[in-house]
Length: 221
Image 1 (cartoon, rainbow, N blue to C red):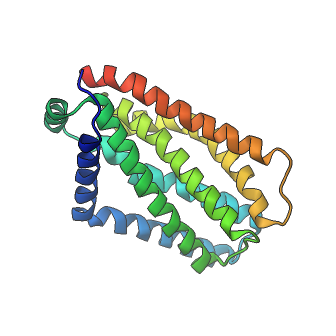
Image 2 (cartoon, rainbow, N blue to C red):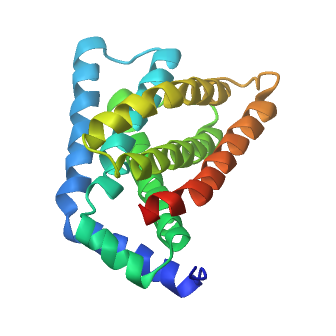
């Protein structure tokens, strides 16, 4: 088994970044999707209530993640995967995917938040708190779909399989994120808020651990 080396991981992350820069239509396509969705919402209902604003934000984050993050494994051909197998270890590869997808989702989350504020106004009373929750939520959703995309990449009908596996898992997580983000719309922090943060962090750690344990078996297949 090859040892994990920081240089290999950094090289693989750089490769992902260069590919994303060359394929800028993906990034701009997602921005167009978010902007058009919010514009339709604005035309149909104007400025939504706080709860609706919060729910819409996380629903949009879900579909942004599906389009931006989940494609990372689906775009890899068998020949390219075989090449990566010869130059790096399985854990190097999955860790590089996790890091890149985290960076990508954090960027898309901040862009989405900016578009929400520009098009649907800013109902937030605690803006720094919501930014922190947005970063944590973006990382959580990214980790889940990176893990699911790695599994689905080994099967036919990959996108359909990922959706079937992903949505039952991600819906409870989205509901948890909505609850965690609720205090940012008021001056009162609800009881058990830090416990919910801890639960989300534990779930994220479990996803990373499962990725490290299971992906080498998929890699050998």
